[in-house]
Every structure is written in structure tokens, then in C-alpha cells.
Length: 282
Image 1: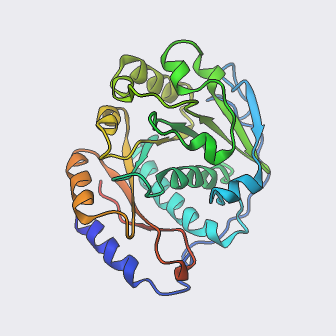
Image 2: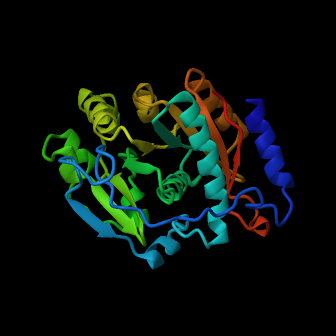
């Protein structure tokens, strides 16, 4: 908990021009299309559809990490490096992204982190939307989808049929959106169908880093139900939005779960960055 308190204090004290000073844009050679976990070249589990993302739409949703020339992508690159180093060290493959309450920017963080990872030549990434009550990954990415997590859980669609390979420029990532909200999210999150789906993703896409956009932790018991299926959690809070008491409560819920990174969002604009990534608790 001390590192979270220190992060809050440091965010208030950050001086202009500090954003992104510690990260550099790496060169990114063209990458071949990556399917499921067969290495390069795809497999029988390769997604049935590829969709080109619209850069203007991404910009309107504050999704910018696909562009390594955009200085706003640098904090996400720094976050990417920190998260991947921690996950590689522990051999973790699946990370959940959550926040204490709505409005902290967890989905924007999850999508930007995924796109930043997708820019690395030797990495593959799979983004899953498990915010079943208020899914937002498809909206952020500009995806129109008729099937997704809900139809997979209900047995109406196969996992491979629901996965979309999204492309922006020369970079690609896999995504499993939630196509529509559902009121019985707690039941689904704790269901055998959810456990089976996540196990299948990890089995079929072993070479991928799997990022799961979760609901806000304090809005329901949805996150608690799915925590046993994850390796670690990235917690997103927001200056002026998140209260210390809410972060304390999240910390209690996550007492037995490694927190790979704490991200402080919505720092003052004069700092010229979207996010400030701070320490981990493993």
C-alpha cells in the first residue's frame, strides 16, 4: 500500500516535461501476420476475420499507442516495458486491468497497452473484454461485432469465430470483444463456461500476452469471481476521481493477487501525458 500512496504524492509533484523521458521509440520492422499459437504463419485457430482500425476513430477515443512517433505513446511504452519485464520474470501470461470505480480510464489503458505491445516484433498480444455490464473495448477500437464473449459463453459461437484480428498500419493484435452488455454478469464471471473459455485462450494462444479488461473492482463481485483465472492485475486509479479509501479497499481485495503495476491516470495536462505508471506489488 505504501507504493500506492507514494504514487499519489509523486503524481501531484511531477514537473512539466517529465513525461516519457525514460522511454525511447524502438525501430519496428514489418511483422508477418500472426494467427493463434503456432508461431508465425497462423493455424487452424486463426481468427476468421481481420479488421483495419481507423486512426481517426482511435484518436477520438484517446487510443494512440499504435503510433510510435506520437509523444503521447511514450508513457504506454514505458508501462509496456515494466509490465512485460515483470511478467516474463514470473512466466505470467494473463493480466487483468481494473480500477476502483468507473471513469478511471482502465479500458483506454488496456487498449493502449495492447497496441504498444503489438508494436514489438517478437511479441503477440490478445485483448479480451470481460467488462460484461459495460463493455467498451469494441467502441474504443471502432469494431462492429455481432458475436463475442457473451455468445461464446452461451455456446452460440465458437471461440475462434468470435476472435477478431485487428490491424492498424503494419501492427496486428487479437481481440475478443464483448458484443453486448448483460445484466447477469456475476453469474457468467463465476461460471464454468468462463473458466473453460479462459483456459482455452491460454492453451491455444500460449505465445500471446493476454490482457483482460475487467469491470471496476468495487462496482460488483465480477472481478473477485475471475481473479483465480489470472496471473496478475494492473490497477488503474485517477487523480481527482479515486479516493484513498477506495484504493485501500482494492488493495485488501487483491491481498493474495500480484499487482504488476499501479497506473495513476488523469494527471494535470501541463505534464503532457495521459498516464503515470508506478510501482508493482508481487
